[in-house]
Amino acid sequence: MGDTTAGLLLLLLAGVTNASFTLPMKFTRRWAWENTWLVWTVFALLVLPFGMTLLTIPHLGEVYAEAGPVLILTVAAFGAGWGIAQVLFGLAVEAIGIALTFSIVLGMSAAIGSMIPLLRLHPEKIFSKGGLGLMLGVLLVLVGVVICAIAGRLREAAHAKSAPQQGKRSYTEGLLLAIGCGLGAAMVNLGLVFGAPLLASAQRLGAAPLWAPNAAWLPVMVAGAIPNLAYCLYLLNKNRTASRFSDSGTGRYWFYAFVMALFWFGSTSLYGIASGKLGSWGTILGWPLFMSLIVITASVLGVITGEWKGSGKRPLQVQMAAVAVLVLAVFVLSAASRWV
Image (cartoon, rainbow, N blue to C red; front, side, top):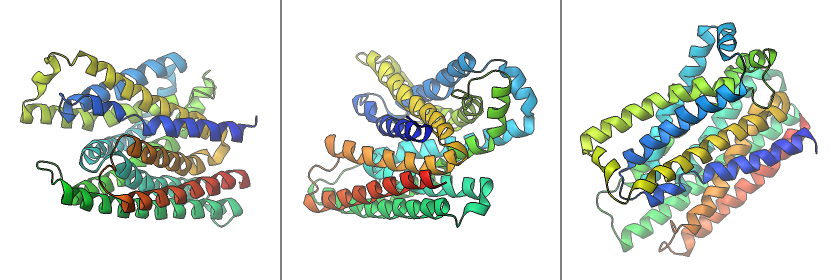
């Protein structure tokens, strides 16, 4: 099996895993959003990254000393921006559901997170066969996202007629949250792109190429944890929900939050490994592929978990049309990965 094929298969696994990471939130109903998200943040952005990096990157202190504070702070800044986007993501899922949130956020992220690396790493290849294939694939992703948004609006209108919901964020508010998240979500990929010297330094000091991305993931995720922790602590105080951690019958919720973290961190690590196998275009082509696979999986999960129940046939038909466009985008981007 060639590296490109292996990279594409790893991206498929990463996409399925990432799209599934919020599912355990459906089983933590006695906790408020901030309870679950706080525990997820601690596990996903602090405990697992620290543990994995220490296990896989020898001479970690030397790696960071060699890179210098400017580079580390730059990578961390991308992580902080992405961390703010993660807060918006959790709120958007609560407002408009898994399928629509993933569609909007990851579609925007696919465009931003692939075009900036292309302009930075290979500006001379924009109009090459691979560059044109990438732009066509990203365009298809964006078209699929627009169709997803239409489907979500139709679904929301149908639900509003049949059972108006009190106390839930409106569709418009959820849409704005998702768009804001989409603008910042690509920063996790940019952290990996601009953190390339960290990967090179880690390999020079003995890290296996497979695990070298962990040297960049650590500052990205630690910085990303800060906005998440701050917002969750603010909500715990404002809503007086800290006591819910000790509610009877919620002990298993800690395990659910850990599973969320394991799925999310695992998928991110798999993406880093897969992008390495796709060569110098790994973060350019791998990112929109990763995003498309997540949207497709999230759409299927949205149907399975009943997010489209009671909305009628039309909204679901439109959503499936969006999935078809995204599947086509996956094929185009897969082909482009072989043209570079």
